[in-house]
Length: 247
Image (spheres, rainbow, N blue to C red):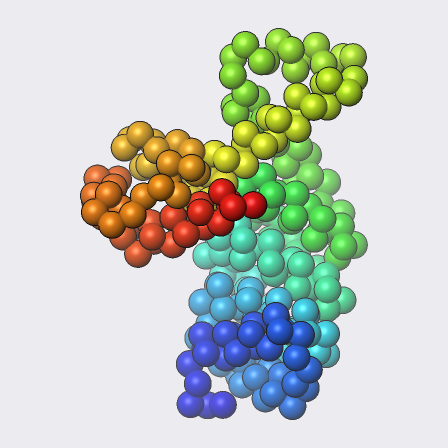
């Protein structure tokens, strides 16, 4: 195992966990090696490896202790999905890590506007599953969700939604569902698109996932150059946008 790079260890664990293939001896070996070299892992590797062990249901307290200790000191390097996946892994593994959960709750609140709506909901559920009362974070999430919901509505719809809140009805529920569907089609809902890239794409006229999904070939390269986004990164975002369009 010492010959494997940290990302290789993480990817192997992730692949076996995703395939639901029991390999206790392999996970033991990966856990020992990962704990020994935990400082070499990047945030995504830390989160993915923890998630893999938790998903596989493989007990590895020493491994989780090492992951949690390392993550506390580097939590500011974590992106929203990595924060969410780490909390979920801790919850699924039933591992006690109050100090790390405190750090993640604080960092999540700091990065709140970088979270996509589904990620906000997921991390809230993950904290609940971990039995962690993150009241301040939950309040901040609720306020941010309301801000996002209003932002995606057309101006003429706002008065309707305010009135609907006062008098709930099936029609109001349908309108809320439509607003949610519209939000899912916004370009920021594409994996890899945060507020910064959303603004970069907006400068070239792309505000919806559908527009992003239609990019290919020369258009993709020109858009990447004009928006100031790496071609490799934008290509990955296009693939996810196409996935959204197919759902």
